[in-house]
Amino acid sequence: MTERARTLVVGDAARRDLKAISRYTRRHWGAAQRRRYMDGIRDALARLRRDPELGAPRDDVGPDYRSLNAGRHVVFYRDTADAIVVVRVLHQRMDVRRLPPSGR
Image 1 (cartoon, helix red, strand yellow):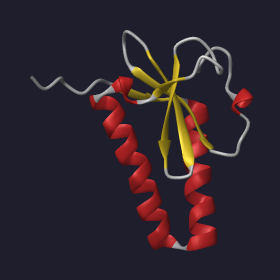
Image 2 (cartoon, rainbow, N blue to C red):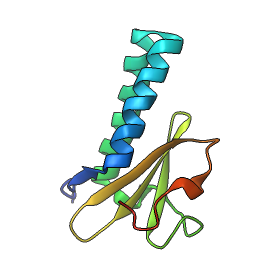
Image 3 (tube, rainbow, N blue to C red):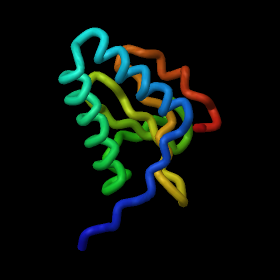
Protein backbone atom coordinates (compact mmCIF):
# COMPACT_ATOMS: atom_id res chain seq x y z
CA MET A 1 0.00 0.00 0.00
CA THR A 2 1.34 3.42 -0.94
CA GLU A 3 1.06 6.10 1.70
CA ARG A 4 -0.16 9.53 0.64
CA ALA A 5 2.43 12.33 0.63
CA ARG A 6 2.29 14.54 3.70
CA THR A 7 2.12 18.32 3.79
CA LEU A 8 5.55 19.92 3.73
CA VAL A 9 6.03 23.32 5.37
CA VAL A 10 9.26 25.20 4.71
CA GLY A 11 9.88 27.55 7.63
CA ASP A 12 11.14 31.11 7.21
CA ALA A 13 14.74 30.30 8.17
CA ALA A 14 14.83 27.32 5.79
CA ARG A 15 13.39 29.48 3.01
CA ARG A 16 16.19 32.01 3.57
CA ASP A 17 18.72 29.16 3.58
CA LEU A 18 17.44 27.88 0.24
CA LYS A 19 17.62 31.34 -1.35
CA ALA A 20 21.17 31.79 -0.08
CA ILE A 21 22.19 28.35 -1.39
CA SER A 22 20.69 29.16 -4.78
CA ARG A 23 22.47 32.54 -5.02
CA TYR A 24 25.81 31.15 -3.86
CA THR A 25 25.69 28.21 -6.25
CA ARG A 26 24.82 30.42 -9.22
CA ARG A 27 27.51 32.96 -8.41
CA HIS A 28 30.25 30.34 -8.01
CA TRP A 29 29.23 27.60 -10.46
CA GLY A 30 26.71 29.10 -12.88
CA ALA A 31 23.01 28.87 -13.63
CA ALA A 32 23.03 25.30 -14.95
CA GLN A 33 24.74 23.94 -11.84
CA ARG A 34 22.39 25.98 -9.64
CA ARG A 35 19.41 24.31 -11.34
CA ARG A 36 20.89 20.83 -10.91
CA TYR A 37 21.81 21.40 -7.27
CA MET A 38 18.48 22.95 -6.30
CA ASP A 39 16.65 20.15 -8.15
CA GLY A 40 18.55 17.70 -5.93
CA ILE A 41 17.40 19.52 -2.80
CA ARG A 42 13.81 19.60 -4.10
CA ASP A 43 14.02 15.86 -4.77
CA ALA A 44 15.15 15.29 -1.17
CA LEU A 45 12.17 17.33 0.09
CA ALA A 46 9.80 15.30 -2.10
CA ARG A 47 11.22 12.07 -0.65
CA LEU A 48 10.58 13.42 2.86
CA ARG A 49 6.95 14.10 1.97
CA ARG A 50 6.53 10.45 1.01
CA ASP A 51 8.59 9.00 3.86
CA PRO A 52 9.19 11.34 6.83
CA GLU A 53 11.18 8.67 8.67
CA LEU A 54 13.75 8.61 5.88
CA GLY A 55 16.00 11.04 7.76
CA ALA A 56 18.09 10.16 10.77
CA PRO A 57 16.94 11.10 14.29
CA ARG A 58 18.89 14.12 15.58
CA ASP A 59 18.49 14.15 19.34
CA ASP A 60 21.72 16.18 19.48
CA VAL A 61 19.79 19.04 17.85
CA GLY A 62 16.57 18.72 19.82
CA PRO A 63 13.61 16.47 20.50
CA ASP A 64 11.80 15.24 17.39
CA TYR A 65 14.43 16.62 15.00
CA ARG A 66 15.56 14.57 12.02
CA SER A 67 17.98 15.28 9.18
CA LEU A 68 18.45 14.19 5.60
CA ASN A 69 21.49 14.84 3.43
CA ALA A 70 20.88 16.69 0.16
CA GLY A 71 24.11 17.17 -1.74
CA ARG A 72 26.52 18.97 0.55
CA HIS A 73 23.65 20.31 2.61
CA VAL A 74 21.60 18.83 5.43
CA VAL A 75 17.84 19.32 5.69
CA PHE A 76 16.78 19.59 9.34
CA TYR A 77 13.11 18.95 9.94
CA ARG A 78 10.46 17.86 12.40
CA ASP A 79 7.65 15.44 11.69
CA THR A 80 4.63 16.91 13.48
CA ALA A 81 1.04 15.69 13.60
CA ASP A 82 0.04 18.30 11.01
CA ALA A 83 3.01 18.47 8.65
CA ILE A 84 6.67 17.88 8.00
CA VAL A 85 8.29 21.16 9.01
CA VAL A 86 11.62 21.99 7.38
CA VAL A 87 13.48 24.08 9.95
CA ARG A 88 16.86 24.74 8.30
CA VAL A 89 18.95 23.68 5.31
CA LEU A 90 22.59 24.03 6.35
CA HIS A 91 25.87 23.16 4.70
CA GLN A 92 27.28 19.95 6.17
CA ARG A 93 30.15 21.93 7.72
CA MET A 94 27.90 24.40 9.54
CA ASP A 95 27.24 24.33 13.26
CA VAL A 96 23.84 22.73 13.93
CA ARG A 97 23.51 24.77 17.11
CA ARG A 98 22.24 27.54 14.81
CA LEU A 99 18.88 25.79 14.79
CA PRO A 100 16.24 27.56 16.87
CA PRO A 101 15.09 25.57 19.91
CA SER A 102 11.43 26.00 18.95
CA GLY A 103 11.92 24.39 15.55
CA ARG A 104 10.43 27.31 13.62
